[in-house]
Structure formats: C-alpha cells, structure tokens
Length: 451
Image 1 (tube, rainbow, N blue to C red):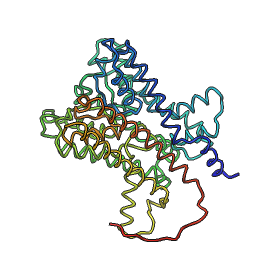
Image 2 (cartoon, helix red, strand yellow):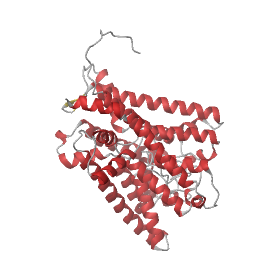
Image 3 (cartoon, rainbow, N blue to C red):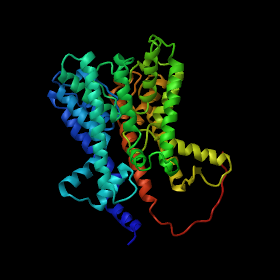
Image 4 (cartoon, rainbow, N blue to C red):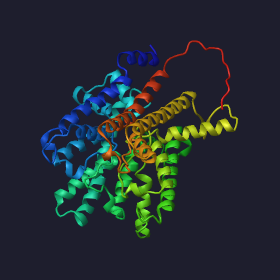
C-alpha cells in the first residue's frame, strides 16, 4: 500500500478540516467558562460576552479586547488569558498530539497527519521530534525574553520583583505568540521610546511569527542559500522586505504627527517606527494611539495586517509565502513564462492554486465582515475596515472601535477572528490532503477570456 493510499484512508476516518475547528471551539468553551467565574472579574460580576470575546481573542492570539485587561480581570483571570494565549500559539492540535506522545509514548497515523497540518512538517515520521523541538524552542524563547523584560520592569517601572516577573512573563508569552495582550491600560504607549522594552518585544514577535519550519531548515542549511527551499526563500526575503518597507513608511508618514511620534526625539521616533512596522504583523501591541494615525499609515497597516507573518508560526494573515508566491506568479505570467521559477526551483501548480485560494478566501472574509459591520453600525468605513482586517489577520490593533461595538457586531468580530486563525489552517490542511488524490483522467482543455 502506498503512502498516498494510507493518507487518503486516514483522512476519511479523521478529517483535519473538522478536527481543527472543533478543537479550537472546545478550548474556547473551556476558556469562556473559566473567565465567566465571578472571581475572574475585578468587580465580582459575570459578563459572559466579555468572557467569550476575550477567550476567542486569546485563543486566536489576536489581542482585540472589549474591556481593559489590566483592570477588568483579576490575577486569576489574567493567568487564564495567558494560558489561552499559550495554547492558541502552539496550536490545539500540536498540544493534543504532544500529550498523546507523553502519555502513550507513541503516535497514531491519524494524529501524525493532524500534527503535520498544524506544524507544516513534510513527512509522517518526523512529527515526534518536531513537536518536541517546537515546545522546547517556544519555552526557551519566552523564558529569555521574560528575563530581559523582568529586569527592565524591575529597574525602572515596578516596585517589587514578583510584579516585575509577572509583567515580564505575561508580555513575553503574549509577544512571542503574537497575541498583543498587555497588562497596562494604554497597552505599550507608555514605553514607546523605551528600547529596552520595545526591542525585546519586537524580537519576540519576529521570532514567533516567522514560522517554525524556517528555523528548522536554517538549522540544517545555515548560510547555504543555494540549498534553501522555496518556502525559506519566500519567508526570509519577504519578511525582511516587509519589515523594512513598514519601518520606512511609518517613519516618513508619522514623523511630524504630534498624535503619534511627532513629539518624540529622534531615538524615540526610531523605536516608535520599528514598533509601527513589527506590531501590524499580527502582534497586536500598540505603542501609539491608532486613532490618530494618518491615512497613508492606515493603508500601509492594512496591507501588513492582511499579509501577516510566516507559515506555521504564531502570526496570522494570509502569510508572507502566500503573498510573495502570488507576486512571482504574476511576474512569470507577465513575462510569458510557462512555469513559475524561484531561484533554481520550479513552483508546483498545486502550491500556486493553494496560495490563490487562501488569498481570495481572505479577501472574501474581510469583505463579508466589513459589510456586516457597516450594516450593524454607523462608524466610518475606514475604521470598520481597519478593525475587520485586524481581526482577520489576528493582529489586535484597534482604532478604539471594538469596545464601542454593539453585542451583535462583537459577535461578527469574534467570527472573523476565529475564521482568520482557524480557517487558514483548515483550508491549508484540506488543500494539502486533497492534493494526495490521484487524478485518473483529464477533461479536454479549453482557454477562456480573462480580463
């Protein structure tokens, strides 16, 4: 029996397209129940909608909130949010498979395929090692960032070590998982010019959002660029390009804006611009008031939020690889080439179709969410689009609109966050598994008019 037949039969018994969403829904249900407990709220009163919205935002590592995380939740509630962020960042399927490894000491074929869906591994036999490396790398990175942040909080902002350690741990986990939750009422606005806070957080965001497969491949190939896969080339070059473009665009647009970084010194403006380039890549933190950004900055942020970060990382969006792969497809088509080439490799037709599907479904979801909010509210279109794209890309940046939305509109945002996080994983897994089917016949080919 071939590996294709094994995968196909296993898919019929256990379809990741159903398991992944159901697993996330289960975690969301548990998280909502915990955050609905009276002692999770500082007021002692239960608000089920706030609990549900916060849970979805945490599990989907988004960061959009309807209440102030710093004052609305008790330490217990904040700890639950931290746990939900960690679960959402690692991926529910990854955690479930790891637990199966620890308890049973082995992994079933169906669980291997589900883990492969979440981690983007290339084979069934390497899942065990990949899961262990993912968890180890995650905890190590979060621990290192937590130490740096704790030292800074203790030396400058917090009066005692336990408080500084809690702030350091929470923001390290939140930043590495691209969640954007903060324990300050103004998020990170008070630290906009503090490079000892902004720097480690930006580093953690990039480390978590670039994607685990990129690190694993870099570990093997290192600087042998000629051996890099198409995925690694697109990820590294694309991520770096968007980082530089976002930094320069933010710096030029907001340099003289007194509502953002206009009143800061040069060093403060540079740190603010770095954050303005990194945070829209689905991180969700904000070191400025996004209600005061200029229109050109808003447009650039919409693009960055929609693209997101790397595949199999903690970032959302359609992913860097998808965006730049489609760019290469367009370039090849305009040049009249019969195939898409990148370096010394040829991009498969299946990869091109998957990228196009993910991108168009993302456009469709954003459009549907925008129409729903326009109908349900009377807020300006630019703010509505910003909020919806932020929810889809699991970014968490807000133009101060989400807390003002009526309950039914908040439900729409919750749905967009869920689809933005879970939908891309589900669609990608369904497309990857369906590509294993062997086509036994071909229909007659016909060309149609395009454009």
